[in-house]
Image (cartoon, rainbow, N blue to C red; front, side):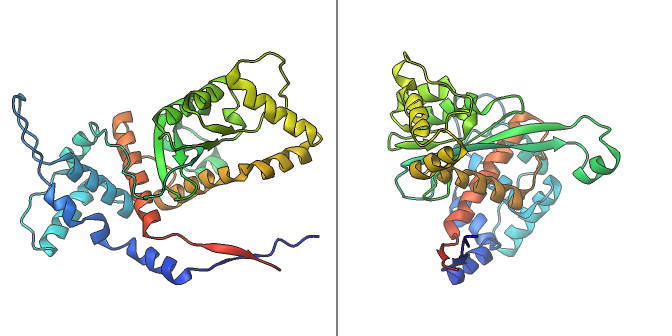
Length: 316
């Protein structure tokens, strides 16, 4: 039996400091937010003008996600923060935060300055409502359980979430993949996905963007003599696996040589997301759910920027 050795964190002191920093309210409620607290006046717009800016509402959603606060408790939390900081600013009510969150269309802010060359993609389910797993296991489910699907595109170098899309549970992974490639910067050279992305639309998206797809063909894949140019990489992957033997061992060897296992960093991001923010969504409407997910992804990116563990495998 071959021992895998031990994985040891080399920067534990810095990583430990970053974990402590996650609880500092100044990280989430900075002076930059206070400068943009009020909305800019828009001339010619009918109706009552907005008091608070989108940045203020989004900051409130981020704080809510990090500290797991209900909307009413969030309002009280913000009020107490401003009192402690001795700042004379009004605070949006919980109804304003809920109503305004539906219109938030902000994109995630890129925090890392690293050039994005790779993207790893994956998806997971988030529960909207329904009984807990223990109750279902013991007594079965008595209510309709509703889930949404979260699709993520992550930079494997900086560990940042670059794109996120929340859809119905029935939407397939391969349907969202072209959206990621369409929005991705031209610097992206490779994309990594599992067998769920082994479809013609995904290979066409890679061809249009100019990025190399690292996607393993499904086990029942066959070689086609005449294919359009965007499917040539799939044929090549099939022939490479066939050249190694065509069995499960050959597929493992192909994945190792292609660096396919970088894709697991998307699963790591999903694990971190659920560990920090839970497995469910608070909102009931799709608009508020998307704003909630965007705030959680932004909070996760800020935590990533604060510091991540760096380690190496040691011989057993």
